[in-house]
Image (cartoon, rainbow, N blue to C red; front, side):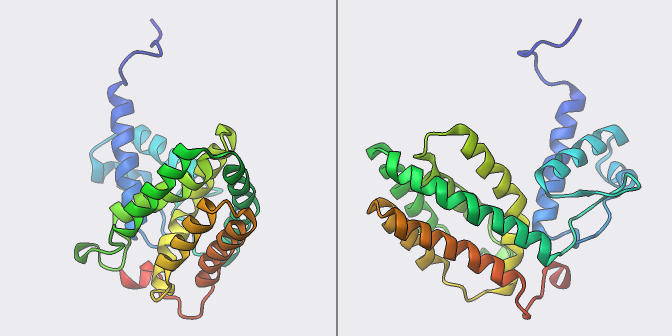
Amino acid sequence: MSQTADAPPSGKQMLSEQVHAHLRDAIMRGDHAPGAPLKPQDLAKQQGVSLAVVREALVRLVGEGLADRLPNRGFAVPAFSDHRWQEIAEARRTIEPVVLRMSIERGDVEWESRVRAAHHRLARTPPYLPEDGQHYSEAWAEAHRVFHRTLLEGCGNPVLLETFDRMWIASELARRWSAHRAPDRDGVTEHRLLEETALARDADAAAEVLVRHLTLTATALISPAHCGPAENA
């Protein structure tokens, strides 16, 4: 009998979820250097699961932009490529300001309240914790994501928000790596200006601030001061 939509996940599915979460966190932390191979056999031994479970998790990571599938059917952490991250930044600079304009035009008072709350949470969450070293804390990374997404949610278009979600995941590595390259960047002011211009319903100013915000991240990634996570592992 086929599994129904309401049936609980199988043991294999649960294991795949666990392995996916473990690998995702490890890649984000920089445990695997840029360009490093992700060998299914080794990962299966380390996690005590089957090759099929590991491959399923790796395929999900490929779809999220957190792993590459190589021509010989192997897997690897995305290589540090300025061109790759510039393409992601270009896509975000093209799409997100348009969605932000729609959000400012359509957003209601409830949206304004959510933007204020999301910014307050982001401003009060420390980006770094002693135990995380030079990596953004998980709490800050989530508060950062929620703030940017909330800014756009006023657009009321789930397809555009799904597009944002995919681009956000794909750019997460770039954003975390940029922290190593621009440690003195004033992200607090950048986010405050985004909140202020959006809530002032100044679409032109908000779009300009957002483009500049995204451009600074892209610029940091090609800075000669690069000392990416591989060099700090």
